[in-house]
Image (cartoon, rainbow, N blue to C red; front, side, top):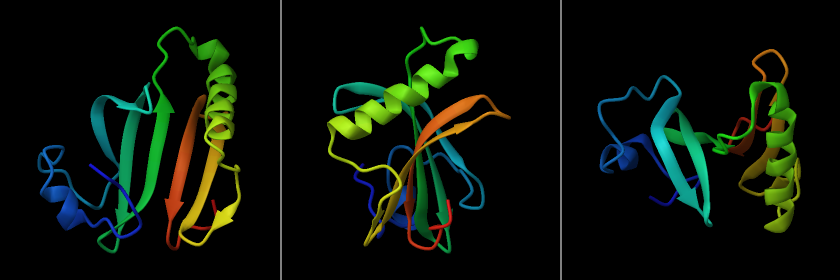
Length: 118
């Protein structure tokens, strides 16, 4: 599956990843996916029928809850290695490496279209 700002929920419904999910909620794809040789958990969010947000979480099970900031550091490094500037606005959206202290989780967030306020 190739994701882009033009990817729609109707496109998603045609993929093997669709199993009746609602476009009104965050869609967790459920298992680990390999992207550029690394395993990630992936979730998608659609708005007005278009893909709006892709969340990637590096799936290194050796990182404990207490060390979740290490995952954020790994996310930062992955983005840097791929020439992606964190928080830079591109014509299609932006990429953010985030850490949520309340949920003690870190993600790479790819935000398309009108969710530019992340």
